Length: 487
Image (cartoon, rainbow, N blue to C red):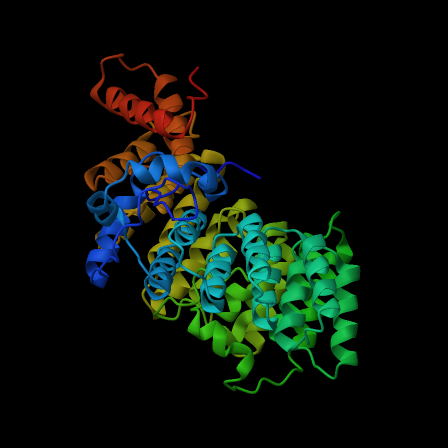
């Protein structure tokens, strides 16, 4: 078992821990929710956390030295309801690495987790792609006499897909059958997409056969899983691309009935979209407003994303032609995938086609910031003079529309621009200055690449820009590891 550090809060002693232990502290009043969350934030910053596995041997020593006042000051939850609120907040903040610590504190505090607690914990591990933690919480649940239901198995199978572990997904399927848990349509689709993540087309077809035998038809998420399976299958052949087009054509025959079923009720309550549950590439953008993703184009989204991954310009053009014949209009995700850095047009050096698609989209609606960033990042492939100029002009247009670079987009653009070996390094310097003007710190790899590019040029060692980049690099290296690429 991995050592996960010390507990978030001090230990308290129980009367059964030691014959001569101090009496337990008096009952603690429950702090208001706002105070509880503030205490949580302070507690998460405390150093020296201990695994609850060692709690039995250390409780007496630590508990006797901890006063009631100190314990109350550092405590952030007292009962099941408050712990559920804390765990739900961690999930909403996308901080799954703290879920084990919060759970350890819950056990140390003598608070009994309930089924809803484990559901929230496992949803959090799914969102954070933490398979080991997911199975840990499942085992803890079983030890307390709570058997996972079908919805919980769906979340676990989805986590296997996110972590590309098809064997674990099959193991969960066998476990469901052993314990008599009845599979439903959502479970089959979770399995299909989890197996598709590793390119196991034979197992994916077996799931499709099981669905047919159970009287279930294929919907858009099933066809999306079939496309993903062939995309991930190695080696890539001509048959792979032909299968992608074939599945898109076949998907037009399915009939979608909009309904609010019991299959998705808990997902909505847990704020889990179908795209996230089935690990689709649109999961990150599906809740964006302004027409970023049109859900009726799910199969096209997955197929065009596959073309971008496989860098097949010919297949992309066939799919776009099919899309246009249907009388449909591109959404932002389709345009972004057609242009993105590993995408077809820019990767193939066809900048004109990428610019044309961008202009067609922007002529009818306002492009999102990601679209500008994708065009700029893709234009820098090969670091040609025209491409670097287009990239800088695109970023300038984005800034003029009051879009700003966030850490992720800024790091991606800086990393792409830093690879320029010729020229005046204008684009990289421009991106760096934009980030500095808003106190945004790029990622360590992006700063390393930019620092290396500056060192390769003839600039004085006391240049203010070089000194600033060196200082930021030293700070990031101290936080995230030893410096690399310093030559």
